[in-house]
Amino acid sequence: MTGVTLYVTLEPCAMCAGALVQSRVTRLVFGAMDPKAGAVGSLYNLAEEPRHNHRLQVTSGILAEDSRILLKSFFERLRAKRRDN
Image (cartoon, rainbow, N blue to C red; front, side, top):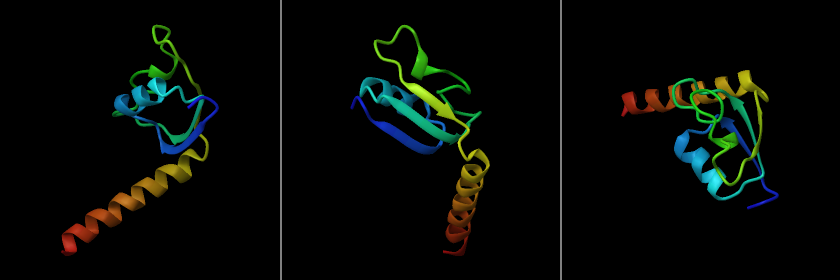
């Protein structure tokens, strides 16, 4: 998938970051850091690991607060819906 730029709201976990490296995505752009499970700068940095045969460019913090609010409100609504059912 060379030449592909992936845009996501939350920093990918180790499994997702590994998939990005293995599929040879060129660039990742994400909003909010994930201090509990992030693997592209928070806990690990699998995207730029020198032992991998591919590294991707990473741009983080784009609309970080908006991304954080979007994710938080989504999961709050999901939990409220489950409580109501």
